Length: 170
Image 1 (cartoon, rainbow, N blue to C red):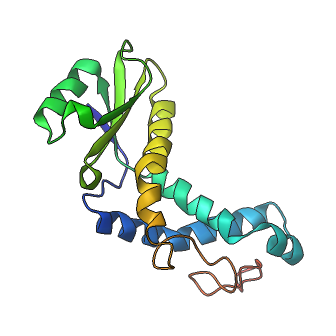
Image 2: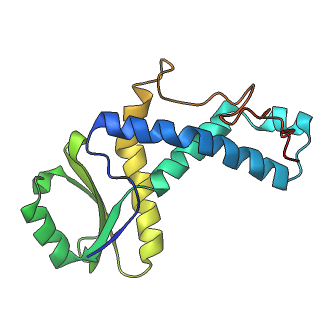
């Protein structure tokens, strides 16, 4: 079995903490990408919305999720040893494919899995996006009162730089 990724949150609170930690990085990624695209201050203000920063945060979180990749038999053996029932598996793809990528979410009582024959990188990325959309998005949406979901794209980012791209290090 091959394991890739950084985050394997065991609790909702841990998932929320990791998501919050990614917020400042997402703001910097968006700001630096806009600089590379040579946005001026007006274009930045028009195009870089809180939804753009939130999308960067969501994608970054998803791409850092731990994913296991193995053959079907190894997945079935892992599932038998894990605290998950086969009914707890949301499996995408075909059961007739030889390889499986999966991400367990203990606090949600679910394993999100996808099958693949070739292309483990694509399978891992597809799985991560599906796990985010099926499980984590709802966890973060529960915080929509301002405690966890979304980002403030206006004002300044986490390192205090103006988000119009005019920070002092230029």
